[in-house]
Length: 92
Image 1 (cartoon, helix red, strand yellow):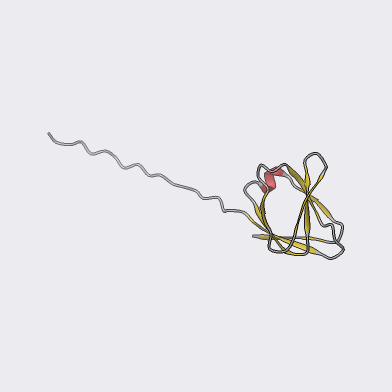
Image 2 (image 1 turned 180 degrees about the horizontal axis):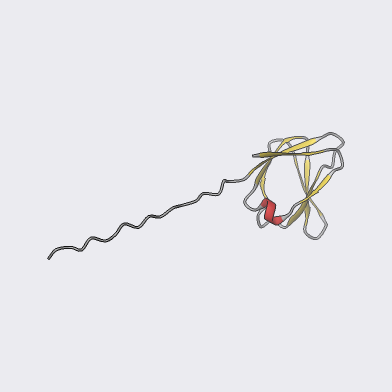
């Protein structure tokens, strides 16, 4: 888990590889989603949660004057180990 801090008017680009499967929660202030075509998207307030995967968001922007904070949660990569057991011949 990490915290993204945006000062008033600040903008942070969303790099798909860094934000893959990331879930954000606004913990302070307001954050505006900037859409892929450059158009302004919705403004999210405190306690608003959002996924970025597949949304077409290219940046996060703080439209206000006060500092905004977003808590970013990324699921940990899980490694699954499969062990095969040797087959024992069945006596007939």
